[in-house]
Amino acid sequence: MYTVTNGPCTRLNSTNAVLKAFLLAYNNHQDLVLSPDDMWFIVCLQYAKYVNDHAEQLRSLFVEHSEGKKVLCVMEPAFLSDENDCTLDDWKQLRIKTGKLKTYCIGDNGKDDFGAYIDGILPIFDQFIET
Image 1 (cartoon, rainbow, N blue to C red):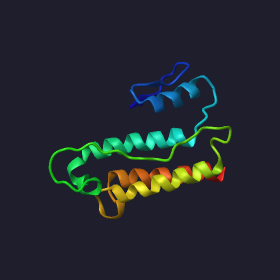
Image 2: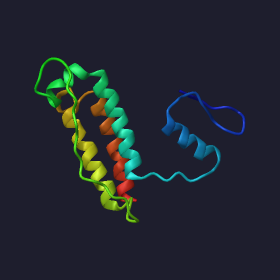
Image 3: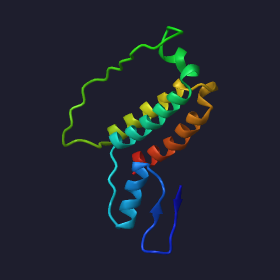
Image 4: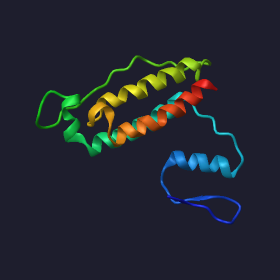
């Protein structure tokens, strides 16, 4: 996925934009500021790939019909950005929402590849919350 060179920077052989952002900040000795929204977006991208890869197995978790396709719409309360972005409560809410995604996995109690991803990322979110 990536290679380390003897030159002035580390190079990346990936199209992953998040990984590229980390590497750009690292190579240029710049700060990288992450918000709960950034992290939620990353989790959602992974979950979208997981759902796409396991669509038929997950069908019963999302819809009642057994054949064909229907448009699904998820309604969330409006989010208005203000100067209080990235509060501790935002990080706690991110952890709660991410943990709940395990209920939408195909393995028992979220014990599959996406469940393992969630198990790996929750301690990272805990570190954000603690600091």
